[in-house]
Image (cartoon, rainbow, N blue to C red; front, side, top):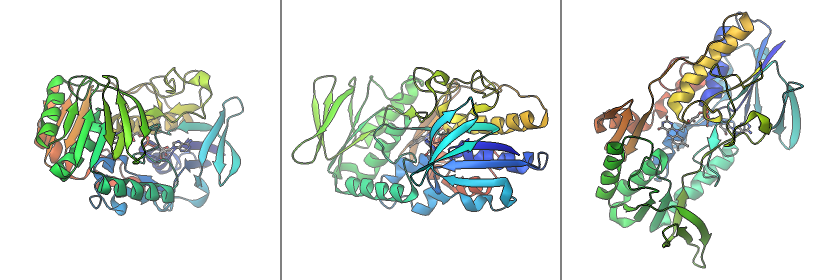
Length: 377
Ligand SMILES: Cc1cc2nc3c(=O)[nH]c(=O)nc-3n(C[C@H](O)[C@H](O)[C@H](O)COP(=O)(O)OP(=O)(O)OC[C@H]3O[C@@H](n4cnc5c(N)ncnc54)[C@H](O)[C@@H]3O)c2cc1C
């Protein structure tokens, strides 16, 4: 039997599992795909920034059960394991997975690490636990948002900016929304014009921008508020604090010699883990491209083809060149900005695409194995 174990059932993991079962299984009859997932449900993390507003994004739009999408394949060719990877032994081709408190040792012929990245604070903006834990965590967060009079957001990358813009454009003057910027303008690393548009629109919604400051520390005061200490010496008190920075790859279970100093899997351009012929990495865990879905999607489709090639005697190829950088940033429901290569994307280019529903309507297609986001599988 040829066993491909996929750790992580996010965009890449689900996409690759479907691709192998659709196209490789008919050629490799003894193929078995094992997909390991911490939750029974996929979470469309892009929609988090709007889901912070109670009532805006329903559970069914953002969560989808994963297993039913795989019922179309022969039963013995697919196994769905609800558990978390806790260890990896590349010498014996085994991954350790914690399933219901027990450790299961799973042997693989090929292993795909597709465990993504997450914020250190365990905000439910990514899948941080079981489906029930995610629902509970979101209920708590939405309650806090509803009750808060003041919200401070730290992290002026796309997710922090989008969250601040959703909150400020929705609640207007009824809540104080503050965003802390490390520099003068948000969205560092992208064209300054793009960041300036975001800053102007946030200000027009009534959000306060604290420039040239970093969060040094946060603690809770006697009133239950978060006290946020900034590098410029000022102190903010907030009913709700959202630290949306410092996202790290979920590679704690991977031997450190396979990781770079930021915890990314060290990959060859063909998505193989450096020095290993049968261990692959994809998406946010890897060191090749920016941690964005557009790159995870193209890597997943490419990796599906490369594992197919490895199993059928074909050529394993490097990732093709791509236009970089690119980003689409929503600014509430009616505004947006972005960059494609070295061109600025007009606001309507964002509001009429991503801004409508963060592509959540594509989720049924992901589960059914038709598409990841925009690209067909
Ligand atoms: C709020 C938010 C908004 C975003 N918006 C955009 C955007 O607009 N455009 C864009 O291009 N990108 C965006 N991104 C980034 C994009 O979502 C990621 O690049 C993408 O999800 C990466 O896909 P992936 O398959 O690598 O990981 P994921 O889709 O995150 O999947 C990883 C999966 O592995 C699971 N996992 C983690 N650890 C383990 C373990 N030990 N064992 C088993 N499973 C594990 C996780 O729970 C998760 O289900 C956003 C990210 C966030 C958080």
